[in-house]
Image (tube, rainbow, N blue to C red; front, side, top):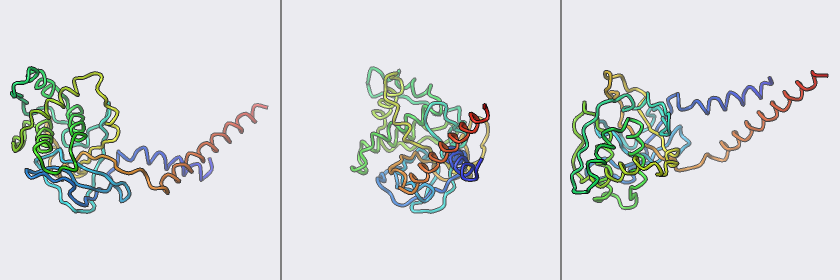
Length: 253
């Protein structure tokens, strides 16, 4: 194998494996902070990727702006490894009780109560897509943040702050999760940003310490130079494979 072929293969392997290693996470400014706490901020991953992040963890703090957080990234699609997330290993959650008079209250409550950690992160991502980001702190957004905190609320932690009526947002999230025909393709655009310094806190409990965990949405495409590197890598691999096949066929005669 040529040195260039070896380099490009290593480059792609490193790119694919990036989620398994800590990255640099910098926060820049609040974009829709809520009066009762929570909301979102703009940030950058590894100095190049602009992101919008939203709080899913009410029990810890994050500083804005701040540079050089060390963070793991985890995906939200089926089969994702949540071992680096705060709530991935949590097995006991505060009970959800919806009682706003909707005939589906009991069923919606049960859907959330029966959800595992990945499904809870997915419901949180669904609610993030419903934020009215240009409206700032209003009753609708406050309800969404309250619902996200309720969904990701371990029984071993204090109850999530009750500063907003979260019932309607909880119902929407539960009905989306329970609907087998609901669109889930958008989950590929989300990542969980988790502090790399968090520590084991006991079986079935969330990881302890570290900064406030965030859901992040990718907001930009890779820079042209990054696209160029990827295209060069793919071209080199194709050339290497073509040369290998040619050599193998040549040895047959």
